[in-house]
Length: 203
Image 1 (cartoon, helix red, strand yellow):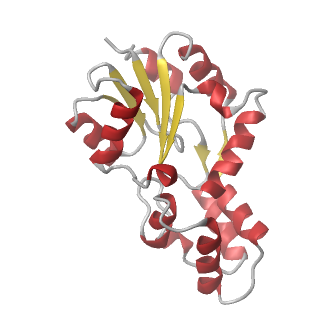
Image 2: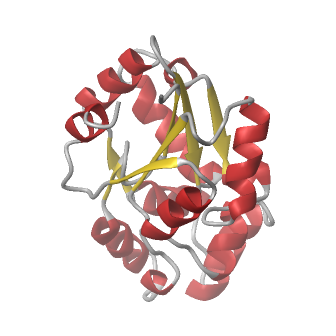
Image 3: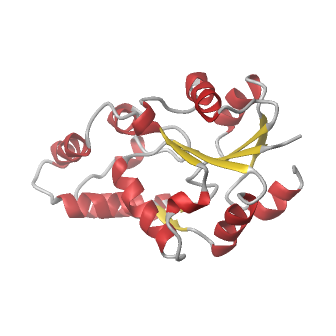
């Protein structure tokens, strides 16, 4: 029944480290960055950034305004990258192997600063990120963000796939609920889940 698999990125493929990220922002002077950084749903100017409504340059300027002193782009980008810890090799192998049989897509709420780091994490495996997916859908490029139903409908339309033949994998319950309401098969996992085991039970 399942012909297409749509993966979330952070918390599903990439291991997240919220604590280290918040500590890194504290070190550069942003004490309450945790008020806008949530594992599942972003808010305020962070959400605007992830929806592509503001540029990376504007995002960094807002960060500097909150801090109240000059901070280099590199230090801000490093603090952002600290949210994205690593990609376990078994997940990369799983996705690459699934792509040989299924149509495999990525749908992520993310931003260009984070994606620069994510692409480096993928490249460390010896393959480019694009080699793992038939197509990559990113919130800041689409000007949409999960859990908005429109972003799911746009993926289905653009990829030319049906909801009933698609499995969506995410660690955010609201994202799962929206996908399910549209008729998409879903798999809700946690950071402690064994992705390979969970996926194979649904295929």
